[in-house]
View (tube, one colour):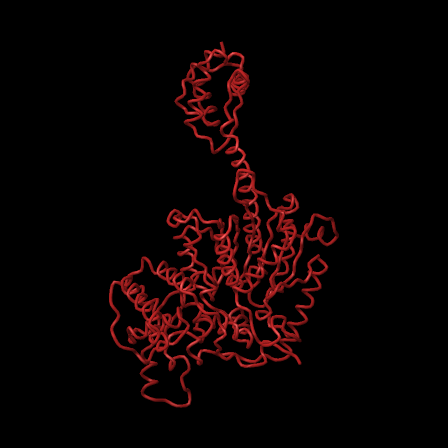
Length: 607
């Protein structure tokens, strides 16, 4: 019997994992952080985006009534980048806000939350803090005309559609060609629990296919072939799977890193004879935390991942590196993977350095209603005018299996990315003692209709996150745009180069710290000076002052070093005293000396 992800209606089920209080608190803190800086009207505009009027979304075109006519007259279109219907005449009351918070943070209806004392107390605390942020209390009561945009609580938001059989057959053929190509490139199919994908150990072996990839890769890749580093690359594709990203996947081979490409079949619109996850429930879809756990388990079993820099004798911690590249809907799994790594590293003595590259991510600013309105509500006039890309993405989103995943498994607690908790900006540097060290790069498309690009850009800028906007490109179309693709590839390559440089710096700093007490020796046995960024200038200044005043300076190697330095900086024609002193001061500053050092003592030693 053929099982597929589209053979049944995507009914709302209760198979989702229980939400922990810590996850609920983290998501609410992210919401408060996003609302920080907004006034009362800004928070009200944010709330309006999370409510809709059913009569306005699906009006009865055959009949007309006073209610429908009144609702149509109350449409208020706001000019701007995106025309949006705001229900200004419909005031959201306290009961509506409580219903919205229950759907987002408790995944339960309001009546169920009120019957639980603990959840009810948490809900009251959330409402009080939201009103404090708004600086105004919500009016009491409940507006029955408004409904929250929570598909788990409202079946009418589920608008899935059947696709013709030729669509699934075509997708199966395309995926078969994709698997054939990457198999020829050296990838092999792997599976670890709920995780499935393709893995390439990427050992430095010469081959015809790899040589062709190096020749056809982006400019300058063939000159940057270094030794393989123990830093695997986890590539997580988004909607429609990795088929349309095959060029980027093959180009990653030139980085000489182990590559793991994650396969999420419920996002690929594929037919399957059997389900690889469970035999008791063939329609089950694994949760993001389950996949994240199996990804780490798989990487720990690979020899390439275990070739990590070992800790020194005096050190207590080893360092493990990883690069995660996620596109579109795949950023939800990347966010869950980051949180899983952070949770596991806090319980161990291992430090993890993660390089994260997000391409058109949906996991950033999930508290904004733009993505949910795009998926579940009818498109606006401007989205219809944008044309083919909007229709293509909506065609994939409304597919049965995809809609089932969004309703039953697309949990914002697993999908959102708390940037303020992981960014290294001065505003958020209070948790620098954490084991997870992360560098982040976000690349978004300017004309992306799925995401609120302006709000995301402002949010990333306020948190000092490195990001880039591809001008004039829609969601995911940088794949077929030459300039856009080159900018994406340069961002990935630069992130890898910075990671290698930081590893070298950390190694040098550790060596300098290990020999700090032996850096300055007695001049009778020979003076040795070790250059280091971590050396204290005051310590160096005091030590050099004692040495320069000693009688053994004439026979010490310091005089020879200073003589060479002086011969390089002073021309044969000779300088005046002032110019000579300035030149010597610049050289002394370059090696860590204080500019106020008395240079006449050096001159006295040269005579």
